[in-house]
Each structure stands twice: as C-alpha cells, then as structure tokens.
Length: 428
Length: 180
Image (tube, rainbow over all chains, first blue to last red; front, top):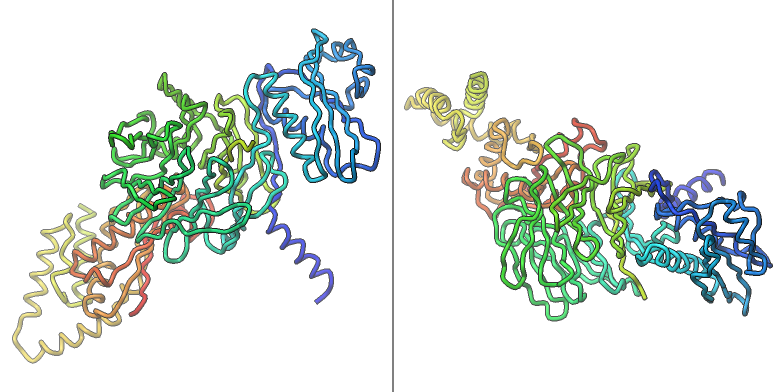
C-alpha cells in the first residue's frame, strides 16, 4: 500500500468528519443600504482571522446591505484624522466602518471600530473590544451585531450558533455538529451510526435535546454541550421523538406513542413528572412552545392531512391554526409569535416549500422557490431569518430565507449531506 | 370489474396452492362474494371422506412450510397512506398462517416512509404503517405477543434518490422474523 493511497484515505476521512459549510447568497433586497467596511489596520504578522472580512460577509448575508469591495475604495482610513467623508459620498456610501487592531499582550488583541453616517458626517457607534486569538471571529460577529442593530433597529444574530446533522451519502455515519451562524468553526458534538434528528436547543444554549433512531426505535437524549455528557430522557415503548425545550428550560415537550399512537407529552426535567397533552387517534407530533410557556403549537393529521394546531396546557383547549394548503407541518414562531413559519405544500403533488403566516391577518406566504423538498425550518432568535434543509443539485443542504421572503442564501457543504438545522438562542 | 376478476383469480390461485387451509384468507372486503364462491368450490373438492383427506392435510402442512408467499416480506403503501392495499393481503395471510402454526415465531414490523414531508411526521406515519400490518395480522388470528413494531420514518430508505420509483419502494413495512 503506497503512501499516496494513505494520503487520499486521510483526506477522505477528514472530509467526512468536517462538512465545511460555505455560503452562497442567491437573493438580497433591491433597496439595500450601501456600507463600506474598511480593511482593519494592523501592523504585524498576518492574523489567523480576517475580522473586517467577517463583518463584510455577515452584513452581506443579512441581505440588507450593499457591501463595497475594498479594492473599489479610494483610501483605507483607520482613524478620523485619515478620513475624508467626501471620498465616501463620491462612492455613494451611506455608512462607513473603520477599525484598527493592536496587541496588548502575547496572544491578546484590542480592536477599536467606529461606524459613521457619511451624509451627516457623524459618528454613530464606537467600541473597543479585546480578545484572544480564538475569539477574533467572535469579535467580528459582535461588531456585525452592533452595526446591524444600530442601522436596522433589530438585534443582530450573527454571534449565535447553529446545530445541524451531517451524514455521508450512504447514511451509515451521522454527526451532530455546532457551528457559527455563518457555518464556520464546525464542532462535532455527537457521532453515531444511527440517524440523529430534531436537535433542539435549551434556552440558555448549554444543552441540546435530540432523537437517536436506534435499531430498537427512537429515543430522546439531552446532551450537555460543554461536558459532552448525554442523558437518556425518554425510552418508552414505541416512538420517543420531537423534543422541544420550554421557554424556562425546565420542561421538554415531546412525542410518545406508548398509548398506541403518537401523542404530545410534556415532561418536567427536574421532577420527571409526565403530562399527556393530546388524546386523538390521528398523528399528533412536532410540539413547539409559544413564548408564554402555556401553549404548544403542534402538527396533527386529525383533519385528514397534517395541519398546525395550538393547545393550551392550562385548559387543554385545541384550536386549528392553518387551513390554507394540503400539508402544513413543523411550525416555528418568529418575532414574538407574530409569524408562524412552517413546511407547506399547497396541494397534493405540489412541491414542499417553507411558508410564513402572519397570525394577526391569517395571510400565508410561500418563501422559498429554488430549493426542493424544503423541511425543518428554524428561526433565528431575532426572528428575521429561517434556516431550513432542502434538496439542491441532488444533495441535502441547508439554506436560509428571510421571514419576509426577500433574502435568500444557500449553505452548501463541501462533502456529504447536511440536514436538521436548529438555530441557537442568544448567548450573553 | 377488472379488479374483481383479478382478485378472483388471485384467490383461486391461493386456494389451489394452499388447499384452503382455513377461512382466514377470505377477508377481502371488496370481493366477498367471489371469495365465497371460491371457498365453496374448494370445500366441495376437499370434502370427500376418503383416505385422501389425510394426504391433503400433510400436503397442506408442507405447502405452508414452503409457501413462496412467505418469501415476500415487503408491504408497500400509497403516498401519505397507511391502509393495506388488497394485493398484499395474500402475502399477509400466508404470514398470519405461519405465525399461528408456529407460536414460537416472533416478527418485527418495521414501518418506513419516503423522504417527502417532515422527518417527525414521517416517523409517526412509519409507525402507522407498521401498526396497520400488525392489526391486520391480529385480526387474522395471530397472537399479539408474537408481533413487535418499530418506525424508522424516512431515515432508512430502501432506495436512495428523489424519484417516484425510489419513493414508492421506500413507503413500506418490512416483515422481519426474529425467531422462525
């Protein structure tokens, strides 16, 4: 066996372990805000991370900004003394970000940045942040969050994490992974020969609940991300599936079929008290908590086709929410419950897409178009973007679309299939 | 009409092969009358109280043991459906007879789905497909303790790919004997 053979095998194995997500923006909004993020001033050996590039790609991915290429800039100022607003007005830029980085100790950096309103020649934001080498990416995302919030009024979610499942083409190896919201810094938290699905974040971002489909059937586990310790939470006869943490993090809503057919249950993770929520011969599944912690949304086949329902945990009252379409499933809420996001099939035989519904007006809008078999929508904590899984060029990939449908991007991986995205909460 | 005549010939075939071991095979609700006719036919053939009777019974046992229908262990379903299609009833009847004749035999029914729709809804649908087969076998007289179900949803496709043909092969209940 030659050395070359081993090298190829090693490359192959490492590509299996890391899915390496990338981002391809397919649609942004027409009236995007022009912004110039000047390359960060730094005197020294090249840094392991290009912080200003991280900011540019974060802002670009949001779809709300038109990013000026650094090569098209007339100058690269790093301080107010070097800054001529006229240059940036000439380049038709509304906003400008300048920054510099310096070493304060070995492996310790200090980053200072300023955001300017070019037209009014006014400073809008100025911050100094410090980081070690491993935190440079975090600094980039934090700056993006601050700029995004300053200019849109919406809290940025670039610093948040996503969880997802990667698998090889033959579906014999599954990895539950966590990465930055831009797909960088992937870390595998669980590997198995069994299928892993329905990852669900605890509200503090410290634990993940998920389903492991073993030979004997589906089981629900909760894993501590820092320690890697996993705990078997539900191992009843039949299906144990679709876990969802309550807003206070103390309970888990899930699906059990121990009664002979899938029903929604809530288990208190501290007392292990089980509460049966639904009682119907049809399929009831995919529970998701309303922000009040007193209601669950769920998918039920009780009308003949899957539709979204809401149940009160206090009164047990059940109300049907969706009426439009042949198949509505896996509901998630966005913007404090103003919008419902779900998997939608308009009529039998039509494609599956992601749709949003304005709950106050009952209007349904199909958000996705260029991907196929769209499923598993997961909403960013600021309620702006939906990450979902889809088929694209015969591969399972992640993609994202804004809740208003205006912004779209694909998150293909360099190898294997990626499924089951779950957008993590804000971590303070 | 074509459907009925097809059923008729299928049941005749079944009768010819098994020699109508029991009334268990006569539950095709769509074709009750035709099946009854078939049963009457065989009864008249099998009734003669001659030494032949014992020979027939032995043949019957052997036939059950090597019943080619027992090699069929896949039951397919329509899209988003979990009812048993009529064409799979003969296969299931053969398995029901086998389980009744062999009380030590244990069967696991694995429900599967195609990739369309959500992962969780499909996990539930897969269970329904396994459960319908289980209920059918129980109605045929199988002891429930011989049967187990498990759903693999859309997670273990028989065929990869997103085509109509692979989807139809993936919507299935797999019959697996633990002890035979």
